[in-house]
Length: 633
Ligand code: 6R9
Image (cartoon, rainbow, N blue to C red):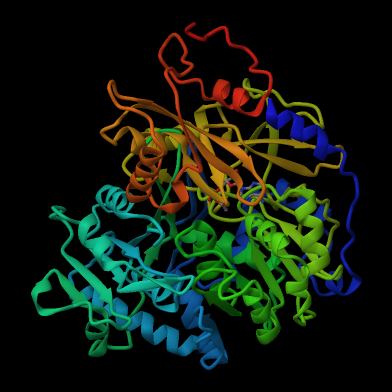
């Protein structure tokens, strides 16, 4: 197996990087080991103490109600996450403190203070109410990475509407599936986003995506110029600026039960349809707040920058909720990292004196290719903590990040977590040494294990399934409308949460993540289900059958290769390859387009008719195909 070979190579990494003394001295967590031991002895007590740092309209009666596999945290507690993200800071003298610094590709800068953000959020919240949106209604958000998009998310949370952000790089097919599944009453969008200097229109995509979906009552359009809302568009469309212009800047936060839904975020699973991961208010608020504080070691005057997009969980937790709850200033950046040149990101680190920087290995590998002369042009001495997320960081990229961005003076926190987990789960915290290529140890209260398919604990340095044995506050509560898919996380190996990743631990308890164990491909840190791409291909009139695998890729981590059987009488051609790629792009979006498409006569299948992607992958990579006893012929 490819993963096992990789494991042996990486497991040889024994070196450890001690954090600089100044970083340990200011760290919130000075002694991880003793606090961890304490936390597993009294999980509920630990999280209760954290929750007390936040504001509750009414305190909880019980910290945890665990009715396997369903959890309720802070039972009976009442709060509103926006109150903790905004009002609390405004009341504590931070009205004029900058919450976000936004930058576009032309380096146009826009700053918003906590006071201004609260007013903007309230105006949108009142606007939502005027459109008839109520607590529990779903609102889809298809907007670029901007302050306005964050404000719409928060406005939903303000009134208890459930937001469902759809990454603005997705195309109409993917957007439609998500709007339809959530039965969104209102959709928010913008006239366009810009990438590599090119304007990408968003409104036409939304119009196609909602065609015939009668439950969509309004589409609110943030017109960033271009006058996209002409008269003949009709009453379905509302101008964002008009909606908020006359609405009040005051809006009482809805009193939310700790277990009231906060948002749905769709993610790829092993079947064709994406799952709507549901997060609730209280537990998600507590764990995103506390991991932001301790893993990024945030202090009052820190400037934080998470380079993710709000369309992903990393943006939800570490651009929006966890970061605002800590009341720091952070950057939000729209457009490509390397446009107009590969110095773009590093120029921002210099200009805004960024202290904590959080990005993905795929970005680091891209910058490695451009060469160290780019970061060397800038003064990045403000940096203290560097974070990594989204996929395993290979030791080579780790070292490059450490040397060229951190100048050997920063700590790297390699944070393992998922859309489903809501917040960091396995990582080092800044005060104990990191090992390149290994994520680190479980976060407080979590019991993590590496097991075989029967749930039996494996010895150190062996590759197995990563499982989590105890519930945690920011865990997903269900999959929207599909409880059976939720239960699958907890009954694949009975009694524990099955993360879907392969991993191993070493004799010191550091965990190394090796990648997905299931049919999910990780392209540049984005989860793409093989089935999703296969469905999109089969949807094309020329295609009879398709199988999709992930292949190692130098920059993206993995790339997609598709094997396609054409319908009778259809001839393979380069033109058809391009047509199929375009088709997938239209159905799912650019990130899901296969790099390679190979036309084949047959696909390896089990006797029960399941495509054996494992066999295709082994053949493709020239590896041992393993057990093929179930192969058809
Ligand atoms: C936060 C996020 C989750 C999957 C996860 C794993 C991979 C994320 C990682 C990592 C190794 C890390 N992953 N962080 N693998 N080291 N530090 O990315 O959520 O989009 O749901 O992806 O990403 O395979 O299972 P999501």
